Length: 199
Image (cartoon, rainbow, N blue to C red; front, side, top):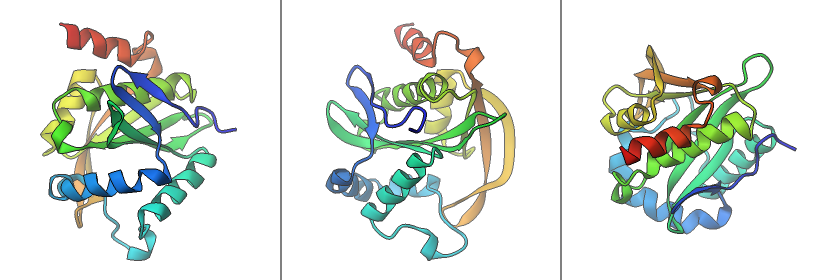
C-alpha cells in the first residue's frame, strides 16, 4: 500500500481525486481549449519524443505506475463535479528527506475563483498528514504571475532562484522555488487559506 494514495480530498465545490482513464474526453477538451494559455509554463523534454507519453491513456498508465511505486500522486481537479485541471505531487522522496514537489494547472475559464490555491492547500495538507511528508516545494517561472499569486496567498516561503532548472516550452528556464514544511502549518495549510479568504 502506498502511503496517502489513492485519496479523495474536498473543500466546498473543489475536489481532488485520482486522474482516471475515463477523464480522457474532458481532459482533451480542456487542454485543447487552453493550449495557448498553458504552453509558456508546461514542461517539455529536451531528449527525445519517445520519453513523452503519446496519448492520454499512456500518460495515465505511466502516472498510475509511478503512484503505485510511491513516487507521485496524480490528482484531477474538479469544480462542482466538472473536470477543470490537475494537481500532481511528484518527486516523492522518503528516507531522511520526506519531500515532494507540487505542480498544477487549471482551465483559464475557472482562473481567479480560488480553485488553484484551494487545490494546492488540499494537496499540501495531504502530503503532510496522509503521505507523512515533511517538506513540499513549488517551482515557478518568474514570469508566471498567476502561479506566483498562488504561493503568495498560501504563504509558501521563498527559497530563491534556480537557474535553467526545468525544460519548458523548448528551452531551459529559470524557476523561483517556494517551500513549506509541516511544522510551519501545524493546523494545516487549508486552515490558513480559509482565514486569508475570509479577511
